[in-house]
Image (cartoon, rainbow, N blue to C red; front, side):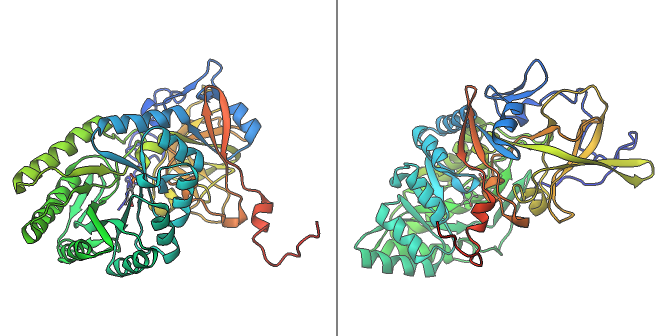
Length: 472
Ligand SMILES: *Cc1c(COP(=O)(O)O)cnc(C)c1O
């Protein structure tokens, strides 16, 4: 399903329970460049700094756990993708992480934004994103949310079901507006990491099936509706994808649909969105492609398939989320307990409990996602030992980093940094165990700016209707 490594396999020659893919580092203090945001380094005294901010200062000023966004890294990545895909529209998938500050950065860097809820839409609008540059997704959009979308002038609504088309037509009639729509299709391609599966039928909740014929019917319906302006077709095949094989099959199947539509109506659909899902490096194992290589690959795929069907190349767009914000974010935690656990046969694993956990990053528990970590407040000469970074929550699966070599003397009070934490961590955070969610700070040129403050117990208690309201 997801990016899962072989878990539990034992090195034959080393007395450690490390999985086979995790190799003992030559220098445990070294930061592997591809894992860390571009302005991250070790200072001379061994402390990690991000964009000129020492993590020790950061921990002192804002506390831990904290999510740190390297603003320059994010902006540079956004620009790199926009330039690599020049001529295409690059929509940032806001579900990876959004706040009004991030929305403003995106607007300033010339990106468009896709949203999938009233909350994301509201934040994007409040952050100053031009509504015309917003795409609105979702498989069960409410009346309230479609109303905001229509009245604020959102650029396109990606319709996902016949019920939604009915609802949208009714709202358009009521409001006296026309909605620009794309039809979300399922191509039968499901891509994850280095593998993709192409099947004949599609057993999932999103979109209209191409294979089952519903996609073409939906296109006809939108084309013929007086309330809808049909812009094109949208396909999204998966997440954490490292190559273009899955996109090739998806493009072939979608463009075949374009050809069928033209045959039936005499008209060509103007636009194709190929979705997001471009992978990043969470561990040394991962080898993501550059934006430039992906762009070259996707351009060639579309050109080739269009030529095959005798179609003009449509306007094109993509929706990277993780690839833009993931590598820009680092999570910082403080170690509270260290526990060696005997595994038998002479093996042991060190459990380092930190002050966060599955409430701020559910991905390891949800998808068995792998992460890396480094001792952040100092360097160490101690032997690297296989360690597991766990959280504070009442679940055995409350794991943040399943396997990592960390210095054997990593102890209580030390800081651990987890790179590639910008996407789907704070954005998916919960209040499990009544845990206030951590803040997100931006760092740039030695300055710290809070972009999402730390939640407090008062924030949580404010929702508790059983408390007497104070008189003040
Ligand atoms: C989740 C999602 C994306 C972004 O996926 P990433 O893996 O973050 O790039 C883009 N488009 C749609 C429709 C999505 O659901």
